[in-house]
Image (tube, rainbow, N blue to C red; front, side):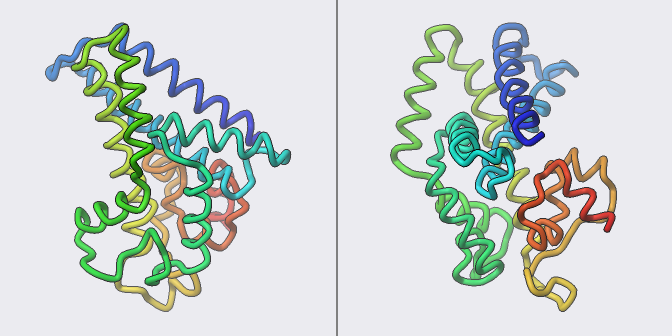
Length: 224
């Protein structure tokens, strides 16, 4: 099932992006414009969640296929280098909520300050070059405004979605006894909202307690 969900997300992201680039006018008064923008943001988040599940080996039993899906999702998401993501995510699970956790900050925990520190961990020169190259290829068929509004902005918005529900809320101070040993908390039990907000990764204590559980089964861990 892991491969099935990964393919569904990858195809949905790609087909929806092509559809809105071809058919959606940029009209701030249009309900459909905002709906498509939010949907593309959510699908971008799904790309990263797919890469994340690959890091835990839950997309496919075959290691090569699993890592290939993770690498593909990482590149499509924002030109990210999958091996680097995987190494840093391993440290996150090994040292959650500490100075050794690359996703955590022991300094200013203001949302935007922490988000900026979080992003610095993963942005590289190669990523910028890859995205710049893809952007220029896109200009062959679409104009600059379309690519910025319908492709770039949803990808940036998804970083806020992932950071807020997958890092900031689960791991921010104060760390209570109920969060031990993972220094992680979970959002309230509501499967629809958990899926809508971040593919069940708001159930973050459960993810740390059972990292081999794929995103689409995290709700069952929450119920237990």
